[in-house]
Length: 592
Figure 1 (cartoon, rainbow, N blue to C red):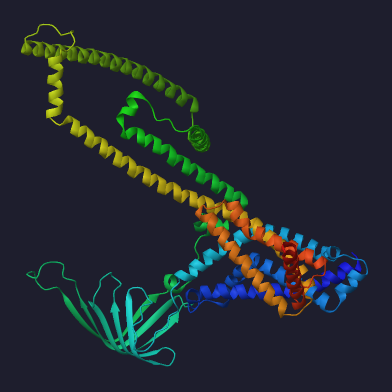
Figure 2 (cartoon, helix red, strand yellow; figure 1 turned 120 degrees about the vertical axis):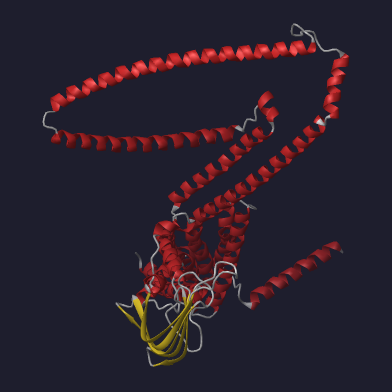
């Protein structure tokens, strides 16, 4: 590495680390303020907060890296330009692009590391963050009873004290007991004084009461004409109540598998599996739509079938084959386990048998007798079944013939008619259909079928829209792992040439310009992702939208920096305005 590369890279690393820590701290503060009311004031230990803050720092690092690269590169080349070091580099025949190379290589390596972090480290940290944050939210606030206010932090109890004496002393205690699921004031305890202190590693709380009374009344479950319910009143000089604080004030950690379906905790491979599962769900909904429509309209089943599209059938066949393969694997595993258990049982039984040969002979004879008996029984059953079927068919034929004979005798015909219907007979049949409202019933049935089919289609469409929205969000989470890493390089192309143009270091102008460009980048990112979520644009274009918009700015600033353009000096814009005026004068002279 040459001295020039060491000089430029060394002047970049210091501001980069400083700005990364500052930006990470600012984003951490924003995140902590978002959950401030939910995580503080619950009596958690210091290390729980340290763990949560550490998870937050790692999870927001992908957002902090682009801003840190933008600000540090702008400060680095601004300092070089302010101290005329960049002018000396150019005067020695070294181009601006050559001066940008060491930091550019570092940013490319940093982008690749950011991609690896987004794909492997951040998902695992997000899993732990969600789990810990949920457990903190579910934890009850710390036990803190205030004088003159009812405290409901202990489930099933409502406690009020008139005065607190010292750390544990209480005066004027009133307790409503709702632990049995009873509402109202049916179980009340009053005491002149008492004390509340934890014991057994703060897993339990003991409430000692002195000089009090307890009133308890059973709830009346029947009408007012029944006899009054039992009411008891008890006086005591001392009484103790123990509260279990394990499930109430302890931090119970939830299993991390409960968050396994969240897309923020998945890497690219897992996201692809999720996308394939969503495709299967959408295809199943479309396939079922065809089948349900076919069942609603019966004439489809008589004349033709509603055949789904070829792509739906191909996907259905693929999904069915995968399901069949999984079922076969599961069945093979179950059969193998059963076989191992049977072999183990046989081995254990063979140890207990003294004369296995005799038992084998006896069991073989018993099996032979059982087989013979079963064959005979099955032959008898089959013969009886055949006789029963013959009798049943004969009975049916006799009944059918008797019915036909009765019909023929009723209408005065000895044989069945084979001649076609006459016009008069047809008109009589049509009049029956018209007079009895068959046509109206058919129309009503058709309308009902149409409405039910429309409702089913609307429900299916809603479900498919939800699945497709989830599909787009999974795709956005997939592409974000690339775009957040590529943003480091895109913002470097803006920050480095801008620093060479403005020639100002420190934390003044560079910070202002960096914040402006980062806000623009953030707004473009949110806009593109919103378009992608709503299905207005493709998710790939929506996630890369901010980088696509930032790249032209970077290339434009590099071009201007190579020409030593003074974009942030008034003389530059005065010269541009004068050139525009000269152009108008030339046009006017040609027109005259």
